[in-house]
Length: 159
Figure (tube, rainbow, N blue to C red):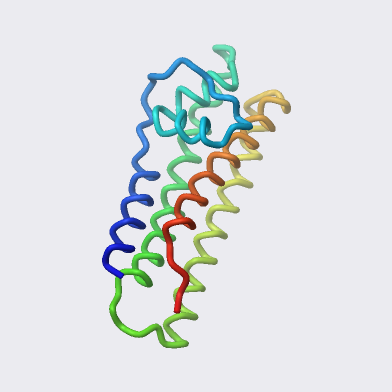
């Protein structure tokens, strides 16, 4: 159980602490999920910039929206991580009331994420041309799916 906790915490923390500075100048094909994963781990912000190909005016409006969204996602990720660590990291039996509480926390984290995505969409549609806004929403969705897959792969089912 402790080994699983270490793996889950490492994956979750690693996805939360992915460097956001400028670096890689190659764009992976966003349909290749392994290439997407590698590009995001190397430098998510640079990957997004090279994928969207923003003009200077668009970039000036986009990056503050992007930064706010990333902060709100970190809050949802932290809440989810706390709930996961509670389940995997405890040696006590998972009672029905405790399981109900953990499930409620996981759903609350999902709701925070959905709320952040709605806010992101509204802000993006004002900041960017609709096609670029939709492209970023799709790209972010793929990035989140890769992160969710990594966590799901390492996380054991509740017994």
